[in-house]
Length: 346
Picture (cartoon, rainbow, N blue to C red):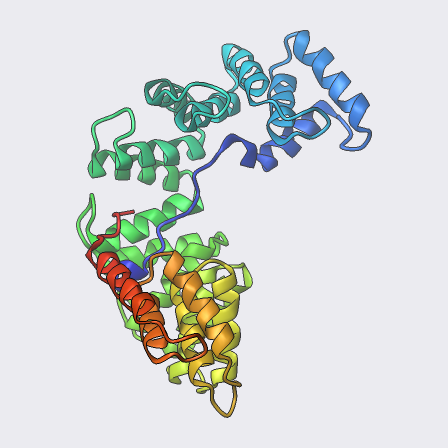
């Protein structure tokens, strides 16, 4: 599994993604999710009387703009009051707001303080985000070792994203000794918890034989499971398997179908691959230069150098577009620049 193919995690935990906590607190307060006006009035009344759960739920209403106008500042204010009453979920949510500068002035040190309090109260989401702060050096000295210590704590608490991160870093030997078998074990545990990134990474492990016996059948099974959960990179890999006949029967129509789904999910390599299929055409896929150029352009907008090269050739030859040496040279220049840029380490 090449490093560039590992999906570490996309989660950043902004406070308004706490839908699960939102519903849980609503149940605790016995507040109906129907009847918007009465709900907000009840919450305001309870919050003003000092109920921290009501404060937290009211803050979520302001964050999401449900039942009340969206107001991040008021959300932060109510979360602050809930923090004063030692509500761990509020500590976490307000910590992410200070980290991202939502409703408050961005303050990494304040964010760190709140996330540490939430972590001390046992919240694995806070532990995971502390790991990411040490990974990125936000408010702290950058440290992969400190980062993985927090990821480990979150994983031990059952956080599937943290398990997947542990797998990705153990596979690379980042912050911990490299161990492919242990990495696969982390991916397996996270997959069993339903984590789509881990399903993808485990599929990649079987595809390449890293930490497990190589198995195209197992790889395709796992990648399809990840794709069903909306994992765009898994969709791209399935497209490649159909395009090359590796692990799945060669079928350009199915390859194009998966590439399109992946491309619509924002994966530039899928945009490019779909463009290649449409540019060439086959017995299974009708040639469509106009659509091919469109997908190349979308991939190029995301910095995909190969798409820029193909656009340069298309303009140089005048295929599907007016012939233009200047546009061809411009795409070649952009291709050269894109190849010089080094991707950031996730």
